[in-house]
Amino acid sequence: QDIFIACVDGLKGFPEAIEAVFPKTAVQLCIVHMVRYSLNFVSWKMRKEVAADLRAIYAAATAEEAELQLMAFEEKWDEAYPSIGQSWRRNWQRIIPFFDYPPEIRKVIYTTNAIE
Image 1 (cartoon, one colour):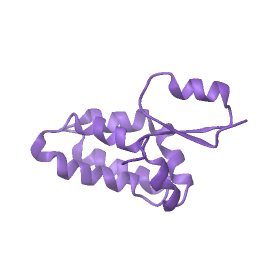
Image 2 (cartoon, rainbow, N blue to C red):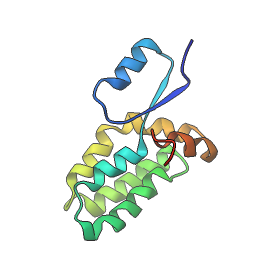
Image 3 (cartoon, rainbow, N blue to C red):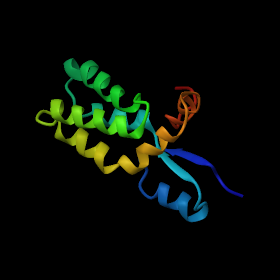
Image 4 (cartoon, rainbow, N blue to C red):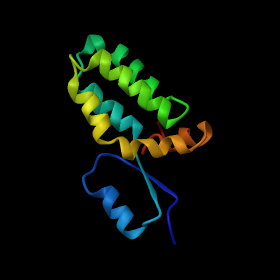
């Protein structure tokens, strides 16, 4: 009848297709895919530090706190890696449904890959 939440990767048109068939579904962008995409812009020696700062965003307790963490990330990294902050901002409406759920549920919906 309907889907409560769908976690999707960055495949173009997939969220819109889900919403067309299941209009009440919350479409969540895969956090793992977002992080991996972001790290594509980062040199190998900086990946650990950038990944830790990205984690502060998606590990936030609320969407509001996550946005503050995103702003801090942008202040620190935009000069070197402007594409990362832009990508998170562009996809923000597909990222923040994640914060509507408690940590136990977030563990299930932060990725499209159940093994991760």
